[in-house]
Length: 456
Image (tube, rainbow, N blue to C red):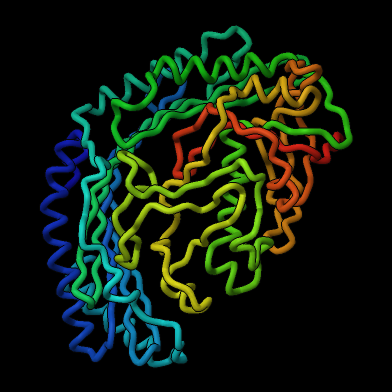
């Protein structure tokens, strides 16, 4: 694709990408053939191509317009369980020839690993379902610009907003090809769109910043540009009434965005790498209670338009629906074939990451949780990296809203919340139904009792 591709809409770029996909499929097959000719016992290759446009608007003017086209190929070769891996951007026959040679050279200097190698052949995906992940848009560059302008204008309507940090819109189409020497080869086409804007407001305490975004596989599923701007304006307006929090032990309600980070810590602690390295606060907890008995968590790789949807993992292993937590009891881990071998278990089709985590909710709204806790904190933003995954100790900067008598009183910031993740997970007292679908971890607001709040 040449520079003229910048003038094409995403649907036209996607049509061109079909030719790229066919070309790269043949190159991947060539790479597998070369690996065999070079004496590799096993080989696996992944090839990716992404095309699209990114646009930044500021003060109703076009600030940047970028056309993105990225290609990469990763290959891993195994020689008597010695492993050599290489990533290249030159996705050509010559590039693959150099990559295979480099991987073979690396393997010669690598000690054999008894756990190295491909996932079992009988675990390879046989059925590739259409999960509705690919929606190339007919929108033009001018259409994108117009949407970003509308979002920014809607956000700036509140009189307290004094400065715009701009609006960003992007649309990309990607194709990924996964293949290995078991004879497995499959491809996945996806699209992704996002629209966001960020604003700064002033009050007696200084400047306040907030932002909001909408994202989806299909542009038609995004919130309207007007709604994105209005959400930012409303969020900033709520922050204008500012006050103090109280120090001590209080219940905390986490908004969906911040609740997702708590679940993310839990999920990281039950991934194979953390487990076989013994660097997890949930080590050896399978079959034990880690959450209150009314909480259920599922993994569903087959959600239509899901951000974590896929029929196979990055090793080609067929994905499947499963329970992660049932009645508060941990049922399963997240294991690649390598970590599964290290642990004496079976792969859970988790190489490359999770596949749509669904946290079952109660028939409660966020306001219900606020009323339920009485006095405490609603956290809407977290800062810092104060999480120890080995011990579970948790301490992060936060901002949000102070709650008294079941009602939000005022915005608070520059506070710290602390606890231990093991205790925090067991002390969950409510899950709301305001599920944030902008991620592969689908959760609503969450209330946790007994966190330590410290003010400056």
